[in-house]
Image (cartoon, rainbow, N blue to C red; front, top):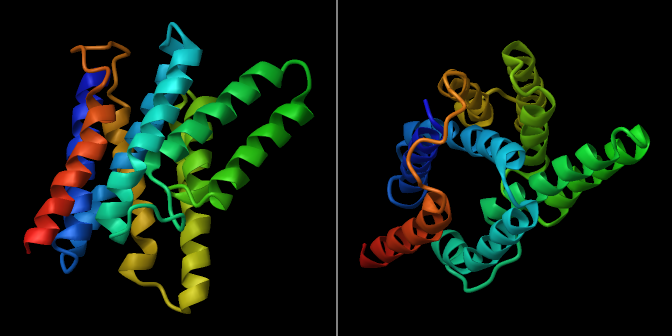
Length: 225
C-alpha cells in the first residue's frame, strides 16, 4: 500500500462521509464509514513531515489550502460565506504539523517546552474550532510519537477516542451509536498498517484539489435538491 493508494482511499471515504452529511443524513452508516478518513490523513501528514524536502513549503501549502477551502466548507456545511463556528480539516492538519515540528525541534533541548508547545497546539485547534477539535491534533501526535509501533498507536487511538466517547455518553446519559461512532476510527488502522513506505503515483496535490472541489460539487447538488 503506497502513500498515493492511501490518499485515494482516504478521499473516497471522505466523499462517502460528506455524501452522508449533506445528501443522505438518514443513513448513518455513511458517517460511520467516514470515521476512517481522518486517521489516514493524519498518518499521511506525519509521513509527509518525515519525507518532505522543504518543510516551509509544506507549511505554506497546508495553510494556503486551509484558507482557500474555508468558503467551500462553510457553503457546504453552514450555507454561509464565512462562518467561524467550525473550520475545515486543513486547519487541523496544519496545526497538527506545527505541533510535531515544535516537539521535534525542542524535545532534546527542553522536554517541558516541547510538551507545553504541543499541548498549546491541541488547545488551539479546539479554540479555533478546527475539525475534530483536540482529538484531531492528538491523533496526529500519536502517529508521530508511535511511528512504526502498531500496538502503541492502536492503544493511543483507543484511549483518546474512548475518552471522547465517554464524554459524549456522560452528556447524553446513554450510550448511542452516534455517541460511540468515533471508535470506528480504529478500523482505519489495518489499512494504514499495510503501508509499504513507497510514494506510488505522483498525486502530491490530489487531496489539496479534491477537498474544496468535492465540497463545492456536493453543495451545488444540495441546492438542486
